[in-house]
Length: 168
Image 1 (spheres, helix red, strand yellow):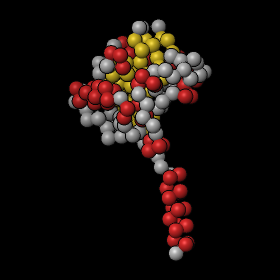
Image 2 (cartoon, one colour; image 1 turned 30 degrees about the horizontal axis):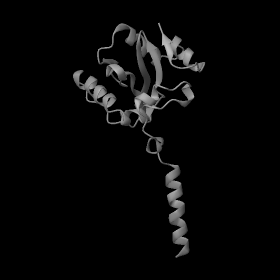
Image 3 (cartoon, one colour; image 1 turned 90 degrees about the vertical axis):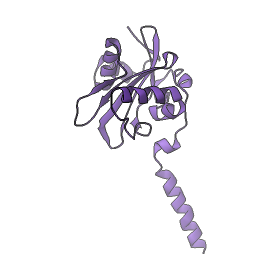
Image 4 (cartoon, helix red, strand yellow; image 1 turned 60 degrees about the horizontal axis):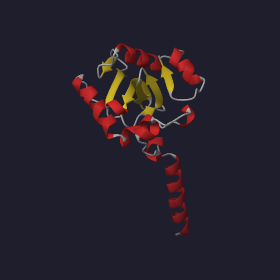
């Protein structure tokens, strides 16, 4: 009987080690995420998304007004840190999320909590990328740089600058 108990304990430990990171994540408010000053310490999209009702509502609205069904993996996908960025006078959180094991399906997001505004760029593996939430040209540029390797924004992020990043 004792060996059954040991097997049960070992199985529980092994199962805990293989839990997805999302299952171990803490929920982080957008207010807290905006205070990040070091990109290695910023909250991830999958931590902010469940904690911020307005982000969820506005992102879902951006999908539905574009006549696109939000992907099932949206709140549970593989994600990046939400980086505080200032564009003009507006403070955003910028980040992305993609389908687990298939980042050909991805969403790049700019979220301005004070304005209760979300704009995004949605890419599917087989279709054209689509703008969500009617981003203005400056927001489109920022989202494009966010998803493009070696862009000026990515180069800046790679150097681990003090946050928020100010974009002119």
